Image (cartoon, rainbow, N blue to C red; front, side):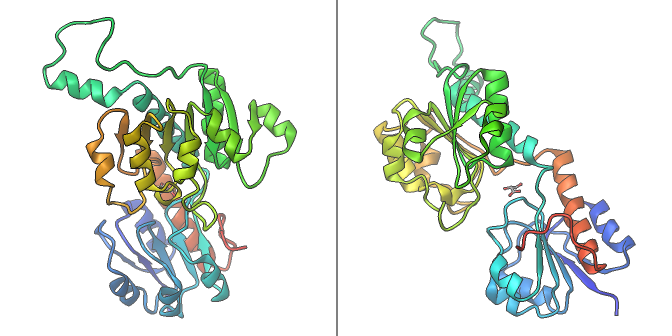
Amino acid sequence: MTPRVVVSQYVFPEAVDQLRRAGFDVEARNDDEPLPPEQLQELVRGAAGLVSMLTDRIDADFLASAPDLSVVANVAVGYDNIDVAAATRAGIAVCNTPDVLTDATADLTWSLILATARRVPEGDAFLRAGRYTHWKLAQEQLGADVFGQSLGIYGFGKIGQAVARRAVGGFDMTVRYHDAHRLPRDRERELGVTYAEMDELLATADFLSVHAPLTESTRHGIDATALARMKPSAILVNTARGPIVDEAALVEALATGSIAGAGLDVYEDEPTVHPGLVEQRERVVLLPHLGSATASTRRRMAAIAVGNVIDALSGRRPRTLVNT
Ligand code: DGY
């Protein structure tokens, strides 16, 4: 029987064609709204492969309801929406899409650092409201310096390192990082970064950028205590996963001036954003999870996910397998 592959939400037509050309019976939703879990379970029943999005919850119950499934290919580098341990126990391959989105996400992180520090959206709104009457020395949108400042990076995988390269090479910044795994010293020297314990990272950063994966040990890694250790002039940037930052504590820290600003691309209960963040327009920049959102990156992510399904169902090892 021809293996059936489900694509849970809209992907580019060429990716669906790639699956069809590989000879699978493809059921590709043309809708980009996630399905409620029971409906996704129903759709996936009997399927051998699933192309999933980070908004699909692939938990142990879901996996138990899909005994024919042998591969789940998430169109994202992050896979905290998938219970990988349960998948591994069930013999299901889980794949992600690393590497292709590293530079796009690092660039977007830099957009947030600069936009928040230099108050770009505030300037734009000011001008559009017809309030720009003349240049003045003490302009309304006086911002913070970026060049030559100190950057702390929490989570130092490929994206964190790409952010660091831009900081060192382009902005002459002092870069410290914290990660569960320290890099070899020669790699640190090559990148021009130093390792710091979390307390030092927090206390020294003019900008703190989050690039850790979401795990039980990073959830609320930036909580009220961590925020209280930061400089009152510091700006927090998060393009990783929302629940790494305690959003209520962040709102409080911004309101009390315990930090100066935040540039966020991800939220604790996405797509809901804490009203305290939405209300705060000064030095808070909010984006709708755009990290990897360039046209070519998103197409490459879809192609990799589909390639992983084809490999797994053809008896080859998928290129970006996550199970260990
Ligand atoms: C990912 O890939 O995990 C991002 O959050 C979306 O591109």
